[in-house]
Length: 89
Image 1 (cartoon, rainbow, N blue to C red):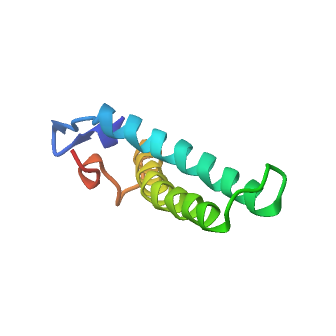
Image 2: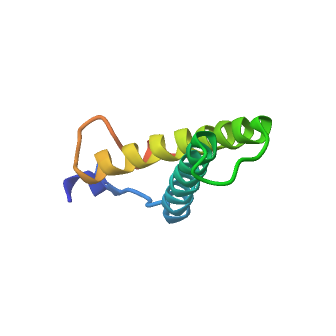
């Protein structure tokens, strides 16, 4: 609980940011897994350019979502160098 009160000011919890980061992580993971399954042929094969596009979009959505979830988890575990101010509004 001490992490929520930095300098006697309660930290503003950005619930929309937490939800958005979680959705980015889940959508990115789904796109990466789907792209890998398409690439290996477990799902009916489409054009290679579409598969590469799915993988690129998956990584572009996954990376920021994962980054923000790591900051949120570290803040909840009361790590010294992490705070909610590191997250965008």
